[in-house]
Length: 356
Image (cartoon, rainbow, N blue to C red; front, side, top):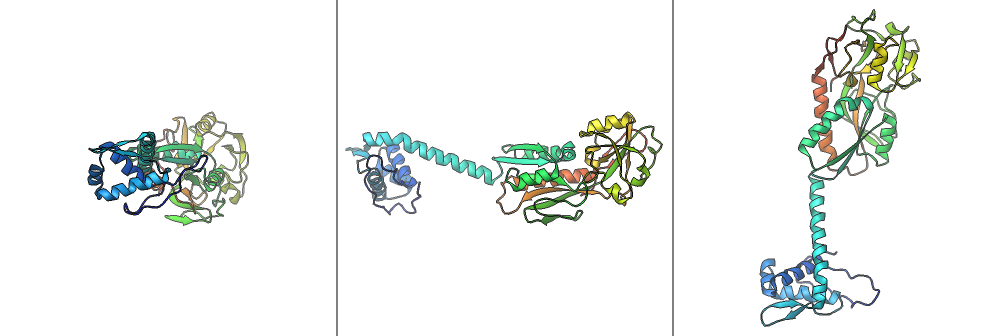
């Protein structure tokens, strides 16, 4: 529908013929038609619209011309009444105007982040606490937004973000610098870092812990250098050390011996508790630690904190709900930075969950 800038301008329109394309109609014409039909009067419709009666007559004449020239109203001694053509047009005009009202409401809801869809992806340990807390806070303020989430590894999440299949991806620098479609980036600086294909919004720097059986000889240590664990069997999510949490060990002169490959963090704790090996645990995954294992901080110079970011695509207009959700993630990250968990077992009397 083509909006009409003034009620006084009337554009000539060709007559309809069988099989012809539908005419271009002004929404002003249709609104005027509905007002006249509802009130049965050009005069009352003009008063409601704030126009002159002659202006209303011109809009109806323009609509009649666009629809082939047949009159839409019979002029009666008192008012007007729709003709057969007018009665046929009436339900269509009402439906068009109703759909336009729905469109306006939906667009307004999107603009105000009161509706629409938000697609979020996150790596597994972020889903342990950071992302659920952010979703809970976001839904309190924006209950009308439909939020979907998926879990994946950082490279896959960044690829889906760049392909337009995610609106926000929570990613980390596990294994060193963050690599992806936008290139490599160092970690640790606060604020936003612009990339060729995506933008990274820093959330927090996450400490790492080593999970030990409660009776382990090193379980009571206040912190441990990574090289002190060179002789241990390891529980890891990947058989490859490169690109995993264990990657820093290679820079300290030893290759960890991966005895068991276990993907899920709760299961890793079970293997550690059974004495089958030790495991590195990010702070975000350390909530709800088992009572029969100990978490000991890894010395920072041996394993620097890994950075956690929220990634958004560059070069695209973001969904209006993206910025409020980034705010919710920042709030959840602040909670993670100031909160403390309580691990039971030697060496785990309290651990911080990383700073912003």
